[in-house]
Image 1 (spheres, helix red, strand yellow):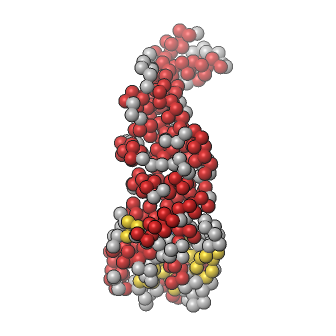
Image 2: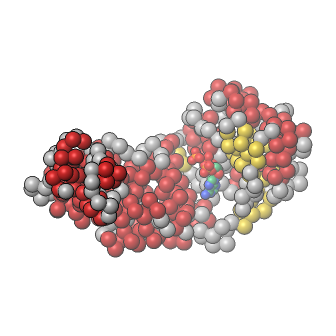
Image 3: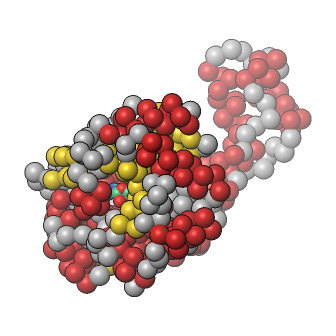
Length: 415
Ligand code: ATP
């Protein structure tokens, strides 16, 4: 376990120079104004694991702990370092932007939970109390940033030992019940950091899985989104499935090995492709329930519903002799994520080929002529313009016209 000198060396080696300079300045400014400042959370973990980490989380503590320490400390930074300070969140966490980094500053605090999934009651505390409210031991390591104490590690829950043993463990047995979003966080960290939950933690997770029912749709959606943007979402989703977390979120929800294989195959794969894959095995009714459960709106809702719509069209997409414009008519307006997901999932080569062709090419096809060009050719203003544009598009898709001149000839023919 590194002492303060070794930790300072590690930080100097593994953090970008401006980040290190900022942390030193934060500690010095704190000390000048009566605050003890600690680096906590992801950045400490990532320095110890030699991984890149961007934005620091700081905890500030005063001799007599108060909840508004973070606000007063942020003012100090604003005055001395010229950082931009955002208004405090509901729990008194303040974001300051300094040199392109977003620094989260919180007053050292304890949290208690009235019921599973509820928002916590918060009281001012020392750094030790603050580390005790955190999700996992590996995220509950503090590093003192004070000028005389720089690099001192506060690790009362064995976070470094867990990191060395490549395991992830909760700080206390009731952790998942306190905040069931930690179930999702656990599989996310397992996947990203290539760790494995301790047996005790996995048992606690399985025991407390039912508490997921109490978590709001917005919070579940937020956790899913955080998984989707990871490097290997399929692994985390597969683990969430194996642990029963997806089913606890919605009984019909599952992540299959076919979905993992499809994800691997997809060329253009973005975070939301994983939502499409996740929704792909749902019935229409279950998709409605899933969208409602995670309070899905906008693109989330569209992708969930479109994944089911494409599934319902697979037979039609496999029919022999279907023209490109026929494919277009079936898939027009559906989310590209849903189409690409099914292109990779469908076991029918014809349907899969057409889905891929739509996703890669057909959906981008446009006629060369636009409404103005049609009017200039003598098409009367009104619905005929739209009808002809549509016909031109279909003719383009089916290769009946190849260029502007062909299109003009077709229009003249129709007039
Ligand atoms: P990353 O952002 O890389 O996923 P992080 O550890 O910085 O990792 P954040 O979600 O930004 O994660 O949270 C910062 C820190 O706040 C965590 O390291 C953890 O100590 C604490 N934390 C965040 N969410 C929770 C939670 N639900 N329960 C307990 N502690 C949490």
